[in-house]
Image 1 (cartoon, protein in one colour):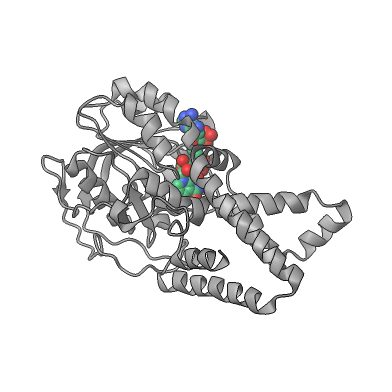
Image 2: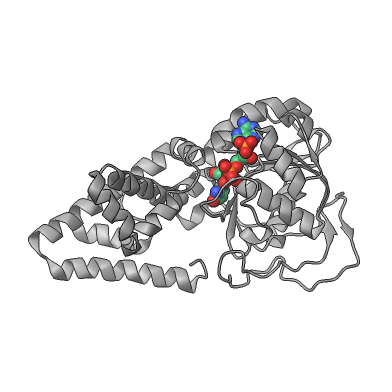
Length: 364
Ligand code: NAP
């Protein structure tokens, strides 16, 4: 039993006992990025070298990463971005910096965010409603917390231009396909996406154009999605410096449940546990936070609305992974109680090995 669990852990997320999803068979072949037929693509003259389309080894994350160097290309006439926070504003900044969109129209929940976005200059125009934002757009990006998607899709559906691509950046994908797909008219191409990138900061001032560089972007187009639209989105994310993969939405949700959603759940939980401690102990927790607690507080500083929506919209996969964690935690507690140093060390060594693999993959 214990051996089986160890084997499952060694195999990686979703490959162990009880896992139905994550197998290679579920991954779809990625279409090669190329110039979409009939697009407004125009070669401009400014040549800047480039790695677009390549899978270069990633550099360290953060603002210090170098600028993405591309051959300047106008990919879209008019881009509408609904949600101008960390991710929406980062994409807008990138599109603007590289001249990939002729016009960027932005919409957010509050007038304040739209005013900030105009002031910073990563959108050309702010639209009072989502419907107004998408009129005449050939690319629509939904970048709000995923709980808002259904209402937004319902509102924009009748106003989408024929041939437009609708995409998103949400951290869950099956719920997005469920909530957005039915509202899109025939002739509009739906290419959901998840850039696996970001920071714990939120809002329009938190974004930066290089946030996607060296990170993965996962596309989850529903079956039958226009290949040209998928290629165009893959090209966009590659230009942003991301590696691109294509997956089934359910597969995505299982993988991300263990690699992202559960770690956030644990961070919020452990910070909450510390917060519930007696006042005097809490003081010590803050004072000695560098012992490891600090890293959890950074993760738990992420936007509560965004993470509430992620937890609620990846319920099944997240509860499955949380159950596995609870079993492993109980097993480790028992080993500590019994003083079984060898087995404890074995578990810790395996975990350390995973950290090395992440560093080698350039994702640290
Ligand atoms: P954020 O910084 O909190 O920004 C959210 C934006 O959505 C804000 O501009 C907000 O407007 C707007 N918004 C909220 N509800 C809206 C509505 N009903 N209509 C129009 N606009 C609305 O969030 P974020 O971190 O960019 O996350 C956005 C999406 O990206 C989420 O779906 C998340 O799952 C995904 N994602 C996040 C990360 C990350 O690290 N943060 C990474 C990958 C993917 P106001 O400012 O006016 O409230």
